[in-house]
Image 1 (cartoon, helix red, strand yellow):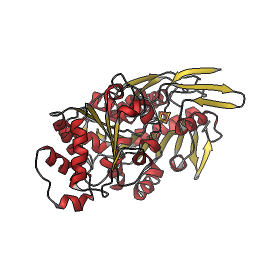
Image 2: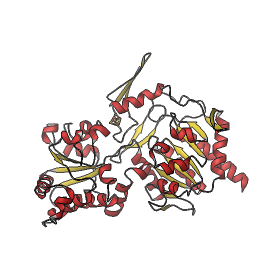
Image 3: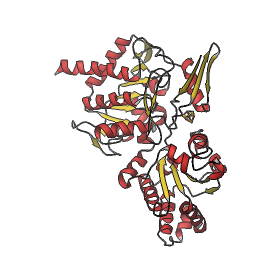
Image 4: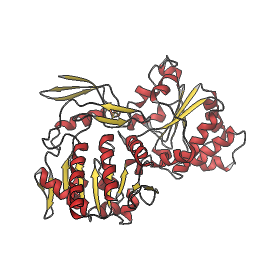
Length: 437
Ligand code: SF4
C-alpha cells in the first residue's frame, strides 16, 4: 500500500512529499534522502523499544506500563528541581505538555536549541531578523549564501527543494538563475558546488561580518582583518558586490556561525549586515535548523512563556538566562536533582561531566530505540514516532508550521503518542502532589 504526501521527521527541512510503500519485504520511502529513509526504516527496526523498562539492581528489566508510569511519577513528584529536556523529534503538542509539566513542578525545561541554534535565537533577540519563508526564497532568491553550513551533507534536500536547484517564479532557470556563495573554513561538498567559496579562518565569523559591514558603510576595514580572517579585502569586496547587486539575497546561517567564537554576537552582526543590505536590495536571513522540530520548541516556549529555550520555573514564573538555566550549565553545576529526557540522547551528546551527572540522578527517558541515555535511565517509556505513528505539528526551518498525519498507528495499546504519554505522566504527578499537599 502506498501513502503519499507524508512529512519526514528528521531534519528542519520537514519535506512533505514523502511517499511510503509498506510491502512484505519492508518499507520503501520515496523522495526521502538517505537520512530520511533511515528514519522510516526505524518503524520495523529490531532496535525499537517495544515495552517499558525499569532499572532494578542495575539491570534494565521489562515492566508493565502502569508500574513504569508510577515509578516515573514518583521520581518527578519527589524531585525539588527536575530538568525536563525535550528533544526535537517530537511534536509541538508533546512539547507543550512538557513545558506545562516543568512549570507545574517548578523545574527547568530546555531543548536542543540550547546546544544548537540557541545563539541564533539570542542574536534575533538582540538585533531582530529580516526573514522570509522558504517558498519566498525559492521563488525570488538569485543569490544564496550558506554561511557556516554544509546542507549537501547535513540537510541533503535543502538545495534541491528550497534554495538552489528548483525553478522559482522569478528564477525560472533554477540553478542558472542563482549565484551561490559558501562561507566555510572547510572545502565542504557545498563549497565545491558553489560559485564562490570564502574560506575564512576558523572562529573569525565576527571579524569577517564586521569587515563586510565596514565596507558596506564605505569604510576600509582595518588591514589586520585580512590576516585575522584569512580573507583578502579584495575578496570581501567581491562578495559584497554580489550581495548588493542581486535582486533578492538570502543567507542560510548554520552552526558554523552560531557555535564558533562570538556565538550570538556573530548572529547579531549577521542580522545587522542583512538589515543594512536592505538599503541596497532585498535581503533576508534564516537559520539552517538541523533537527526536525527544533524551531517548534522555540515557537511553543516563546508563545506560552515568552522565552525560546532554557526556561526556569523554580520561582513559579518563567525566567531565562542562557548560561545559567540551560541544560549543560545546570548539569555541570549539579543544579538539578532528576531528569526527564524526551526524544534526545543527552548522554551521547553532552559534555562528559554532564553525562556522568545524569548517571547519578534519577532519570526517565522517552525514546524509540536503545541509546546511552536509555541505558543510564531508571525508567524508559517507549516512544511513538511522530509523523509516522501519530499526528501533530512541526515547525519547519523557516518557522512555518507543518501539520503531519500518520500512515500507521502507535504500536502500543497504552499510548497513542508522546503527547499522550506526557499527559498521562502529568496526571500521575499531579495526583501525587495533590495527595501530598
Ligand atoms: S532533507 Fe531532511 S526532511 Fe527532507 S527527506 Fe532528508 S532528512 Fe527528511
